[in-house]
Image 1: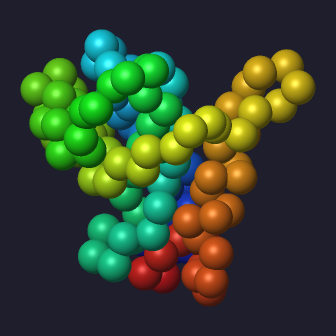
Image 2 (image 1 turned 60 degrees about the horizontal axis):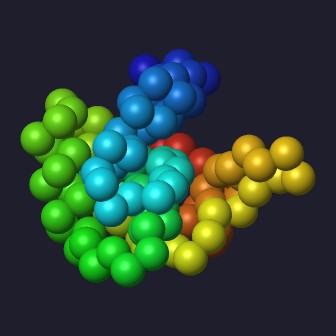
Image 3 (image 1 turned 30 degrees about the vertical axis):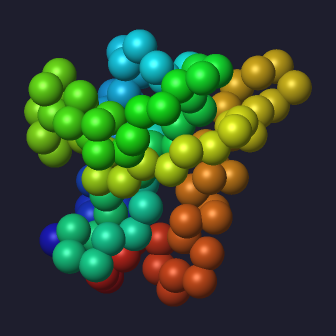
Length: 114
């Protein structure tokens, strides 16, 4: 597979799968953003940044298990990071590129493994 084809595949995967792999339906989740992060073997995998509702105490592995019950396994995030707030624009849209930049910092390529 040529580089541009692989890059296209990663972008499509990011837009189609990762955005739908969020544990949004869980009753203790207030807000979530899912981005692609580097993975040694797969190249890229999903990581969810989760804001919990007030007084919630759910664990990351519980959210991953919840996703596994409701989604295809490849759509489930492989990692969960709990945050107090997600970066947003003035109109309230989540700035996923800031989360993605933080995770890819120090990586030579944006398509890991190439």
